[in-house]
Length: 320
Image (cartoon, rainbow, N blue to C red; front, side, top):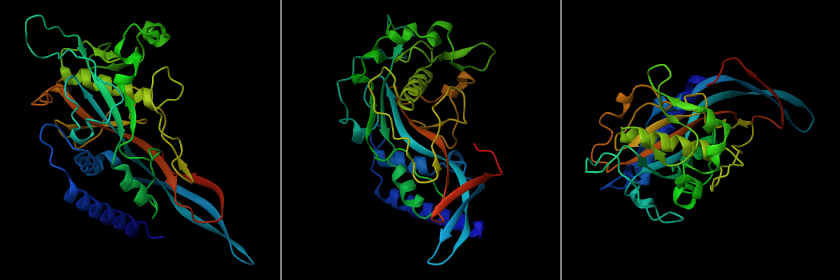
């Protein structure tokens, strides 16, 4: 099998789909549109990290005989979810009415008014990223995996409907993770941190608003990618198709489980786990009115079906 030709063909298909999405992208005045989310997500080739990592072995049978078949095993990230983290207006313009409840009044942390403090609250809404429709189409022709998120625009989490999100004194405050302060999102200096992950609520105390928004987005992503949590949410499916290995749960600081890409108000062209130097926040609150949108990328591994019976796989390269 000529993998070079297949890879080139894959790139051509993606380029064509990007052109289509670009043609129908809505103009966003005060925030970002869902079509812009799809376009910016798909254009981040560094976030995708596509890689040929092995092969799958099959047996294909005809009328009188059976013979072995081999299909390539690939790994790549998919921008499964779009996460809006905000204090005021929901920044995804055309999805602002897609919510379960009314947002609680929030404290905006950088208004420089008398009486302001660094205590900040973020609403979060998580939607199926419309970009997953592209991966679903490409998955039908091989060398691309399909997402566990089956429905673009579906609302998976709305903090306004989750009572635990508004209260830092909820039951999660008694969890061992909250009592010992681990896991946490690390800062650049040893033992320093952006924030604890638990309790997973909307409140933050970092002086930089963009970091409070990132912490809230990460907490919500941890909730949604797990089952059986005390929060009110809809977990995505664990099914990504035949001979597809779904991504793990999101873990703080671990890019083997996820990557974030800021889409608004600043567009990033690479993916990363939150943490590190606070300079990351520089310039990210420009004209955003403390509203931010991120794509959550998660790693997948899959093989194209090439026979009637699956025998096994040989993975010669680690992923991710």
